[in-house]
Amino acid sequence: MVENHARYWDGRDLRPLYLAALVHEFPETNLVAAAHDGIRGYIFGFVTPARVAYVHLIATRDDTRGTGLGHRLYYAFSVAARTQDATQLKAITSPDNKGSSAFHQRFGFVVRVVEDYNGPGADRVVFTKELNGCL
Image (cartoon, rainbow, N blue to C red):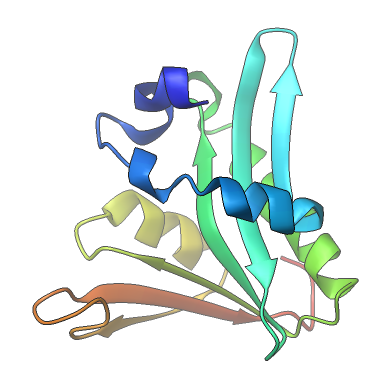
């Protein structure tokens, strides 16, 4: 994934967000969609003690967008999170990430901008969705 990073993030360099500890410590909720031609997408996340299923990263390769893969990854993550008694999904992005906002809104997430979420002047868009139904 790291060697083909640009194919997942449209030129944005998000490699600092790739945390090996997440993969090692939360294998049940870090999922990869792979095929004969390599990794097509992935979702990294975990369930907090407050039973929130937090999605740290979700990405699909440029040639798989629009195929429903992102939705399938989120669904598989939701199923895994429910086995750990999660009751809510949560994800965060920057305000300029319009693609992420549109993606989450299509699946019924509540969207709100939180000022200074990541420090002074670092607003973030926070997505939440109850896990009481299907994604």
